[in-house]
Length: 109
Image 1 (cartoon, one colour):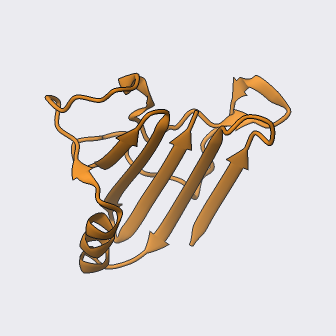
Image 2 (cartoon, helix red, strand yellow):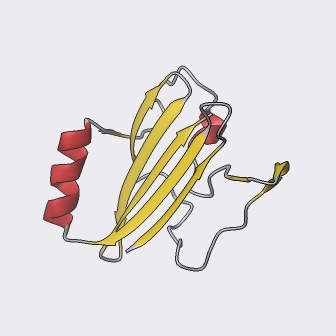
């Protein structure tokens, strides 16, 4: 299991990532439990669509203008066609299943 959590501490900004070895059945149960829908190019969002990415926009806690580099353990493909999404206001929940792993990304900005 891989996890990475960053919180601003002052603002409600948060960036959480999990990578867990699991079955596709586990993934489907999680999609249902979280109420996520598959992303499609036609799907409308109320927030800037640039947040819909697996690179994330995590910030270095010591420098808010510097993007954190992706760790080697966090290695989902950039492809969002198999991504399940829930977007509410400034919050994004992304989930995908690749190579026997569930990738979970939560961003609140």
